Length: 177
Image (cartoon, rainbow, N blue to C red; front, side, top):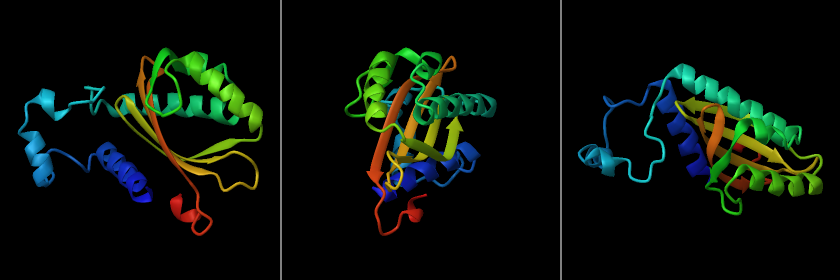
């Protein structure tokens, strides 16, 4: 899992930095994908606006960071009203679609874990996509979880969300961040 998270973060960083480009050396897999018609090449992709402008990505990154701090660190459930689309699509198991479902789920979580915090270790943005690498700590003294969150933003609101997480192991907690 750690390798998958690192690959996700590195890939997003390379794509956002301009180091990964169409001129880069392609693997046989990417060459085959490049030869496919556009509809098949991005099958399953919900965003066709890749990569977008740097300014758009940076604005979306700030939107997500503002939401994340208000919602997950200050436990301000009303932050979702400002930053999350009413019909936000959730791709995270256990979370239902929609802003209200997000607020309801986290009202219960914040009640059980009133001291929970989420430290954003890195953030990467490209067009309408924002990726966060987060150290989520449910209570003081807990090692917490390493989390990768992916958000799609449209019109200054989160419209789609994915996340993967794993417990921080006792043996190498700093190596995850």
